[in-house]
Image (tube, rainbow, N blue to C red; front, side, top):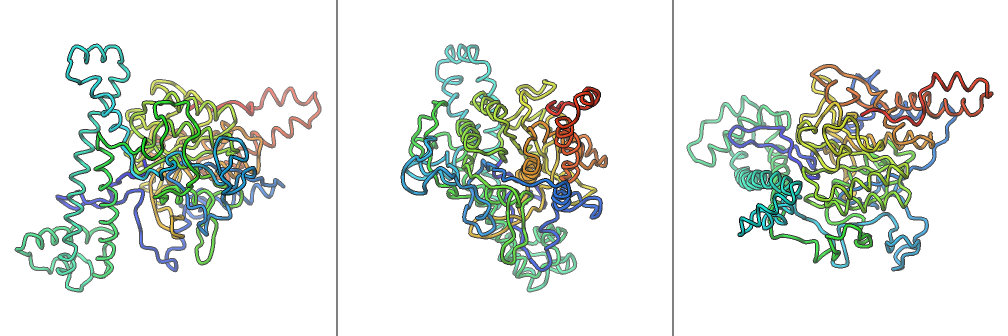
Length: 570
């Protein structure tokens, strides 16, 4: 889920689109202050589906509740732990002496001061890795489609689950690898003709009138440039920009597109495998734990740093960005996701590491269509549940019903199950700041398997090199919910994961327009203040009243009251 293209601007004949999760948007702090923090707004007053952050803190403090620190594990591409907007809210292992080359706390990980990196080793760090479908095709093609047809059929009959996964992966691999090559070719071509577009503008701004006044060129490159200009003149992304602004923005977007597609040469290479050389573990041994290094940031931490800022970013300098749980959360960086698909062994180990080292909430902004080691990951889910840890999972960015297109890891072992096999996972779709188009066009959905929606489009947060950027995706919506959960748990530390989930689901601001109510269990966007009120009334304060009331008064109250530990039906 790290790099997903989400079509935003279409150019006829080119399917020109670049609004992926790593989308850059030029920012003018003087003009964009309202947009930078829109996801914190109160729907009741602003009529924008923000999460009502400030009023939640006011409510909790009005009840005399005192916050405690909540550690949130960010299982992602890495985090710039010394970013000025994050450094004060980075978790530090109290039992580890920095950089002494020893495992001071005896947890099996040397110098894990701010977290751990499961996709690195003594020989460096993995940047680009395969897609999971590539790994499955490479592993099982000789098994199911080798030279011996008799043996192939025997293996297919003997391993039906693996064969089904192989056939699904093979189909996706054929489609995605071709699409990637075509897209790279297209974006490279568009990048090369940006000078032609600028020349045609002749110093004028990008408007439909100015472009209509251009004489139709006869040169082939100029003709293509003219066609693209005609399309972009209708797009808010470019409309009205000066020629210089247009050139700059086009170059930035084409660079991001090319940077996205170039690694796919490795991601879809059946012979490419950086694991053995860099990490040096026995990958087939799912029980192995003590591999990796303490490179919290890694070679490309944009995604993870952005996620961390949404949870716990702090204003600094002229930057006003702040995370939902900025007052209460500490970020533990657990590097798990490369430029490609995460591996199940790493996901399972990352969950267990974060849980064992004190994280009470884990954010997981990743996903993939197949999962060879899903049972190991599910065991880790159960382990987290047993330890009282909440897992927050992004729904995915394919604009699909997740009951028809599973995004692993999933908390449903079968799509036909009425409820998940664990009660500590909340799945999050992405909403926008446009009430008439509340579901982000890229967001996955399902009334049973997606619990809530949260702001996930045009989200401003921290990125490496001490910078900030607007990104979008369910990857951004998930940490909004993780931050909200951290606030609830900080002020009401006795809350259980299923109680936090119920509070967020039952208190969401509903929306029935454009079928939005059918896209998730809650039918709405989370509201942290309302969730705090719900949790306080139904679980926290009710529990206090119950424990302090006379015994004779307990029985009728208990009979009428919903049990605090009852899990919601998903």
